[in-house]
Length: 227
Image (cartoon, rainbow, N blue to C red; front, side):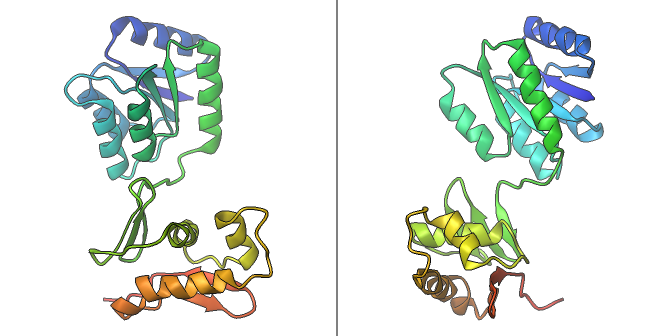
């Protein structure tokens, strides 16, 4: 397994490299954000260990640019204990996990093994279906560049659809994603919210991306006409 460590503190970088090599990993080390981005885009890694507190190009910038290139290698952030907002920001732009310094090396290894089991599947920070965009972090929705304002449950329902484009979601699926277990499953609230969503994301734009699959459920697709 191949690991990239991006850490500017030479002592910490040395400890990480030595420990990972002893655990059987092949390890590359970058001490600047610029070098880390080059390594991560030019080479294939099973996981990246990224310190957020880098000089010049910081860890958040590196991570954002890495995801923008379409690289979905799992990333474990290393952060200061009081860097709560940094951790939140890092997770929002595409990190997979984090550890606060100081940490136990055994925990680092366990987290790396867990990330490697997930693999490099695509995990975009902003969801897109055609020209419809949804940002879970900022709770921003737009269609063809026009802002669409949704109520919280409408947003949650749309997010459920956009995380499974082209798949048919049943009423049970949607209830499980958006409402808690005490919700009455025989209610027609799903239908009401679907109609409300259509009135905001489809009809004003002359579109029909949110479709009913009769007797099964609903699905969202890119309904733009081909070029």
